[in-house]
Length: 146
Ligand SMILES: [Zn+2]
Image (cartoon, rainbow, N blue to C red; front, side, top):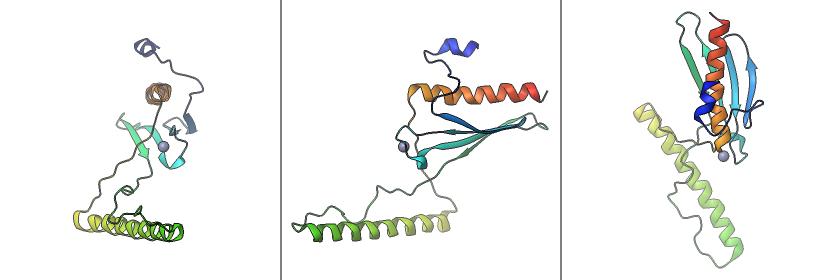
């Protein structure tokens, strides 16, 4: 492969961090795992070859999360008593979570969309495999669907 010469990482087979879930002549489904191990952070994606238009479609399926780090009330308020601290923490976490969800749905109602942020941590090799999986799928499907 000529692209392998451009990078110090080589594509691996089977690829580290990337799994092929399903494959047919016009579409390949992959999952790329997050380096932290949390499956909520993984990216599921598919590369589809449209036989009519000859376009390549990249579909991404990710779990989008609310801005879990935002808070109205301090959850770590200093309270000398352990039990009172724990109760305060749980209560403030619950209230902050409710406020986030209400704000989230309010933005959806008012603006019609919500902006998200999500991330998946990839090491160098996995990012290379991720890129190469798209390239491989496109090449293979174009070859099969000539
Ligand atoms: Zn993660």
